[in-house]
Amino acid sequence: MREAHIPLATLPARVSIREVGPRDGLQNEDVILSTAQKIALINCLSDSGLEHIEVGSFVHPQAVPQMADTAEVFARIERHPNIVYSAIAPNRKGAERAVAAGADAIQVFLSTSESHNQSNVHMSIADSLSQAAEIAALVRHAGKLFDAVLSVVFGCPFEGDVPIERVLQIAERLVAMGAQQITLGDTTGMAHPRLVQEVCLAFAERFPQVPVRFHPHSARGAGLANVLAALQVGVDRFDASVGGIGGCPFAPGAPGNVCTEDLAHMLHEMGIASGIVLPRVLACARNLERLLGHAVPGQTVKAGICGHLGSQGEPRIAELARG
Ligand code: ZN
Image (cartoon, rainbow, N blue to C red; front, side, top):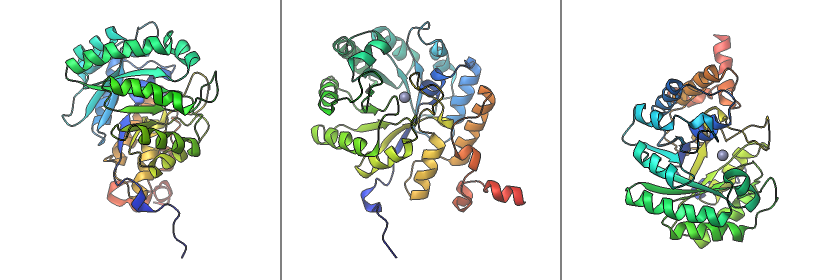
């Protein structure tokens, strides 16, 4: 028998998934969920074995009306002591509100291309880095985790290719500010497996002590292939959204974030632990479909969990149909 081309010994035995559906996902949906619906969604996700949930963001409510009630959501969710509940803050004021709301981790985000940063937060990268330094000081003083998310690392909708050296230089500034993790975002789904490996390897070489998280999008269908490419070079932290909701304003109608249950299903089948209890996260995805009033892009919610996952999964749809 031929040997598999992915030697399992080279892959991480366990990965950490940060659930970004309540923020990255919902903020790109036309339907605005009520505060109670968001709380129900997050409580459902908290019971799914996830260890990190991005609850919302503290941006100006006029800019992102979907996130206007993030403080109230934080106040009313049932928090599990072993789950990190994080929020995004674009500036000092947002970070103050995130700390006051009780976020465990605060994420700053900036783009690795000037034009995307301008279009996203109306500032130059240099100004975003100044804001990040203020946020870092505030967040660390409050004893919270300071986390940095870089957008359009693998391609910019305005500028095309993004030089890896520029990504590393921006990351260097954030690491100097005390970033405890750097997230490399494929915001518009322009990454491909070879590029993912090039960027992740360059990052690991420059910052061997800094954990890297990969934030894949599936706008062009390469999401899970890119995850596998990242796994092969040792990345063990990923972002994903329940149901695969999200999308991107530059690719209307395209699928969004890599889907949490599709990713967890693939990992489980490969023997890589994620801690996620598949039937529970699938139940969240089905609830989400009802709340949004449309089908979610995720595939496992349609195909069901493979039967041989047994007690961890559910019977296959085909078996249900036979029975
Ligand atoms: Zn995203």
